[in-house]
Length: 563
Image 1 (cartoon, rainbow, N blue to C red):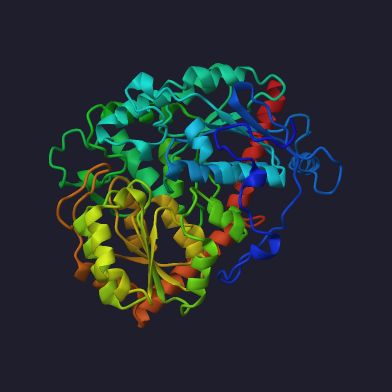
Image 2: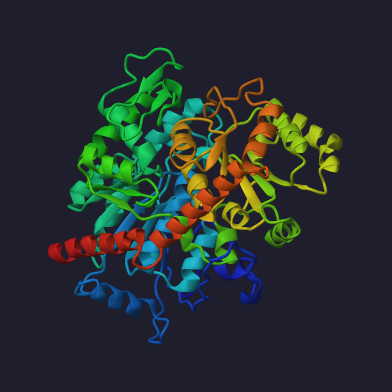
C-alpha cells in the first residue's frame, strides 16, 4: 500500500499541516545552512505494527538508495550490505528527540535505520515520520506493545512524562525491560536486512542480552555529555555514594581531569526511589559489557573529559554531535519534539520585533517540576529585569493559582515585552533567532547543547541528576554562563512548597549575563566561539562528521564479515 501511514497518529503525513517551501525560512543567526526539500515515495506494511519508510524507487538524481550505495562504496565498503542500525530510545522526550536526530544522521550518511518505539510514542513522532517519508531516508519505525497494565501502570502510560507518581518509576523501568523478547523476535525476522548494531539508551541495560544473542555489537547512548558521563562512571566504579548518608555531603570525584566536588543529591543518576539503586547497578554492569558509547557532543568542546572517559572505560567513544544541527530549515526545526501550541510564524514575528541579543528565553524541560510559588517568584524576577522575555510554562506546571496570578495583572503589565508559551515550545527555532541574548535553562543536556550550537550564553538553574554536573561544565569549564543560585535539589516528581530561587536571584543573574559590560560581552564571545566549533565539528570533514562515517563503515564491515 503506497503512501499510507500505519500507526497511531490518526493522520497521514500528507494531512499534516506543512507550509510551502517559500514559507519555510526565517531570520536565523548568521551562518545557518538550508537544505532543499526532496521528493519521496513510501512503502508501508502493518506487519508487527511497522511503519516502513524506504527510499524512492525511481532512478532520478534524488534517489537516496543510489546515493547511499555510492557513499558506502566511497567509504571503502563493497555496497553488498549496508550498515543497519537499530535505535532503542528511552521513552522520554529528552531521550527520544536526540535519537530521532541520530536516525536522520545515520540515514543521511547512507545507513539503514530501524527505530523502536511504542504506539503512544509513535503518535508523537508524526512530524519525524513525515520528514523521513518526504526525504526518502531509509528509516523504519517499529512499534512494540508496551506492557503498561502488566506492570501496574495506567493504560497507555508509555512515556516518563505520563507517570503521575514517582513511586511508579520503577514499574516503568521494569515494563521497558519486558520489551526484550518482542524486540529480539522482531529482529530475528529481519532475514533480508539483518541488523548490524544496536544503539540503545543506557537505561535499556537489557538490550545487551538481545545484541549478544544476535551476535552484534551494542553501543550505549545516555544523552549525557562527556563531562557528566565521566562523573557518572567514576561514581559507579568507585561506589562513592554507598557510605554517604547526608544528601548534602560534598563528594570529591577522584581522577577527574579538573577539580570537581558534588553533593550526593546532585550526582548524575541520583534518584532516591526504592529499587532504583538496583536498576542503576544493572545499568552500570551492562555498560561494562557494551561495545562502545555514542555521545551527543563533539571532541573540541570537552576534549579532556572525553579522552579521560575513553581511558577509564576502555571503550571507543563516538562523539557525533551536536545532532540538533541536522535541522537546517524552520520546518524541521519547529516540528522537532511535540506539537507546539503557539503558531511558529507568530513567535518569529514577535522575535523579529525585538533588538538583537535583547530577549531572555526561559524553559525548564519536560520532566522538571516547579512549585506554584516558585513560578510566581520567577515571573516577578523576569518583570523586574525590564528585559524582553519568552517564558515557557509547560503543561505540568499549569496550576490554578499560577493561572490566576498571570491573568490578574501580570500578563497585562508585561504584554509589550513578554511572551508566555503554555506547553511545548519550538526551542531550537527560538534559540537560533538573533533576538535571543540569554537562555535560562534547567541544564538538561539537550537544552545545553542546543544553546551552545546557537551561540547563546546561559543562566543555569539545574533541578536534579546530571543537570548539576552540566552546570559545572557550562559555568566553570566553558565559562559561557552564570548560576542563578540554586542550593537544593528539586527531585523529579517532587515539588517544594517554598521558592528555592527568589525574584532577586533571577534579576541578578539576568543582569550578570545580559547587561552591557565587558564581562557580559566576554560571555557572548565565548558562546559564539563554541557555536563556531560546533558547526565545524558537524560539517563535512569535521570530527563528528568523520565519526559518523567511521561508525557506519565499521558496522557495515561487521555486516559484510558476518554475511
